Amino acid sequence: MNALLEIQGLAVNYHTRSGLVPAVRDVSLTVSPGEIVAVVGESGSGKSTTAHAAIGLLPRGGRIATGSITFAGRDLTGLTDRQWQRVRGTDIALIPQDPTVSLDPVRRVGDQVAEVLLVHRLAGRRAAASQAVELLRRAGISEPERRARQYPHELSGGLRQRVLIAIALAGRPRLIIADEPTSALDVTVQREILDHLAHLAGESTTAILLITHDLGVAADRASRIVVMSQGQIVESGPTKEILAAPTHTYTRELLSAAPSLTREPLRPRRQGTDVLLTVNSVSKSFDGRTRVVDDVSFALTRGTTLALVGESGSGKTTTARMVVGLETPDDGTVTFDGNDITDLTREELRRLRRRFQLIYQNPYASLNPRFTIEDVITEPLRAFNVGTKRDRRARAVELLDQVALPADTLARKPAELSGGQRQRAAIARALALHPDLLVCDEPVSALDVSVQAQILRLLVRLQEELGLTYLFITHDLAVVREIADHVAVMHNGRVVEHGPADDVLESPREQYTQDLLAAIPGRTTVDQVNSDLM
Image (cartoon, rainbow, N blue to C red; front, side):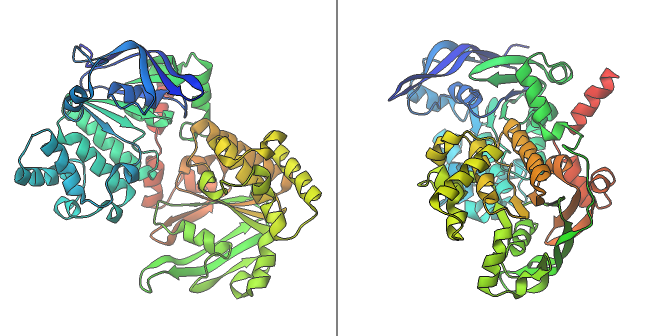
């Protein structure tokens, strides 16, 4: 079959104040009608730059230096802006990563879908409105008539992403470029979105170029995988061949780092006997009617990790906030090392807070951008008036060593660090006061898989060295498999399953837990590959 998209010898440079920065070098790939090809790599690998070059949407300063991009036999590299406008939407469409940024917050979603039809003169205004509803239906949105009248903020993340799919479908494109379309979504919603894209490719000749950092997603969805690192393709081929016998070191590292493709914990499971934290029948509502957390109970023993698992809206983060005293339960108690924190005065709770700390999902948002890393790490020490300035600096140096950051990081600011380095700095800050308990709220979900693996190994090492106890909040059971001793699964505010990690992961009783496990990307494909090799 002739290629629909053919990229040959592509090189892309960014023109910056400090000079020319090469982003992509000598990239060649093809996508045929009805085919799903995945381009895989970490942040900075050049995968999104390649995709944006293929649709003429390079950011300011980006220029194609050499090479060609051909679509259905037509060279696209020399198109003017006006010519590109006729290609985008009808020949090639883009599903961007973040619907929060991509959708207009002050326009109804139906109007935003209809706009594509109007711009390309595919329908009149009245017909465009009715066709927009049908496109929302095709994108897998129930009650599309009602949803079309809503604004983006009234929809969940999964529904907003489906709106972007509807917009991409509006011009009946022959190629859809899906740029990390599910990286911010819960695993079950991710599966539904990817199922729908696969259905589109299967029912028509629509081709899909899938950009992702997750080899598990690529393994499940693509017939071919292209692996990029530092702006170059380091390996490409049929999916099963890449999984069974990767030839490049970087590909092997990605495979070993992807939690969805592994079965083994990072350390032996522990049971523990000395209870540090007890949550007893806590409930919480914010509107006086609907309970966000409903009669939740669990215990956490010293030196172990309890994973509190659930999708967005399950109540897990609200439960975590009650554990550290940032929310007060309407009912029930939280007991930390024999102290009922729901019955403490503000000053008593403040003194106890030295012993439990919170690590947030997004290290960039949780670190003060105006602070140096030294200021960030020593902030808890200053807040509790611990030590002299010299003592606090010495403690900061010690903490940087513990989290494997160089000492010269102290003088830098959060914006000067990578995502993984920022998360290490956030962990160092959490350790500053020698806590007993760390509450980790999705601490690796915003990171590339290899950086994610590094942070998980760091947390395991720190637990071994310092005797830490973790309450680990996550939606990802693949991560749970690597790090947890016990698992509590939350759904609609309640704990629906609770027990040792091996029991919950290998023999789940509840259908919801089974659905979460089934949604882990890559499991089925890897099992098939392993079976073929036996």
